[in-house]
Length: 370
Image (cartoon, rainbow, N blue to C red; front, side, top):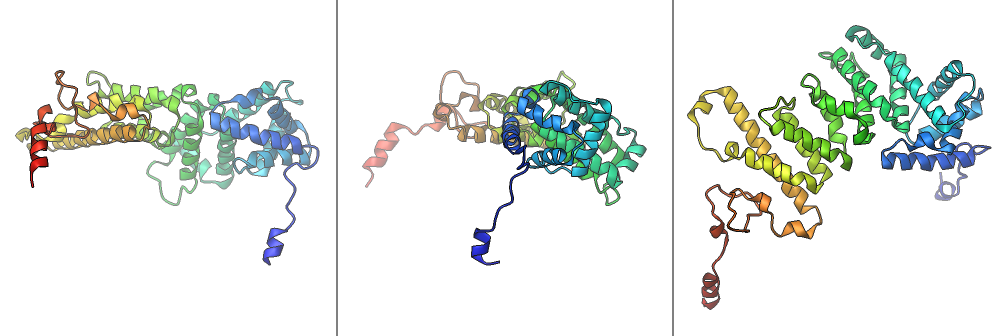
């Protein structure tokens, strides 16, 4: 095709170019705004309620409009939208009158489809290796990411555990859809407001399943997650408690805090560095060398101290806040209250504050030197 033809090729009209064109454009903006804000404001939007009302119409053009509007955010199968419309009309002949009622009717249908997935390992395994079952489940998860209903986060968390349990030990090509299903679940959880998914944080405290939620944890970039992440870290550092988080889990939290880059994390990260410092600087202990288990824990805690300290200094350097670039009392490896001088980087445990100064007389002597 010539350059002229490519430049002046007539463009296809936008989705719903007939009676629904204005609606499609308006809803497209609403979908983008809802994802950016990580909320479920769509449920109260009259324009979005108008779009959902098309699902109760036994009309191919109306369903095509719904499908193409949703697919502008995430790809959905058109046949799934048609099947969803049939299910909604079967449950209720006409659409609920309010936008919120329509939204909740769709969400409840998604919940029903999730709950219909067998949660016992063998039946669930048999389901997800078949294309129709996997395709339906992937479409449910995709539509959930478009609607962002926080009330679905608990059944989807349970679905993740069931999915992993069903396929544990079968990670080869015999389970072709399992990684894709798992990835779609983590993507949904990463989009939900941190304040609106208490079950997720409960799962992070559950020693039996905590590790299964780490991949979703790594995707979280929500500032609202900071208090929950810090609380989990504090609990893990409290040796009198029964935290479910291993050292590896704590390092996952540290990396997420580093990526988010909020200064609220710095004191906790530096406290972890100080708390684990004895494991970092050495102090040879013959009993540890003779005990492989203790030696492994020693190395793990040394790594945690290193990662936490690096994360804290990364956040400080990239904060853009000039005030935290001058004095950093929390960086001190010594608890000396007689001086405000503190190192800006880790130093030997034997270093004293006066060794960080260059005496003025030495500077003058240097100036007088030929």
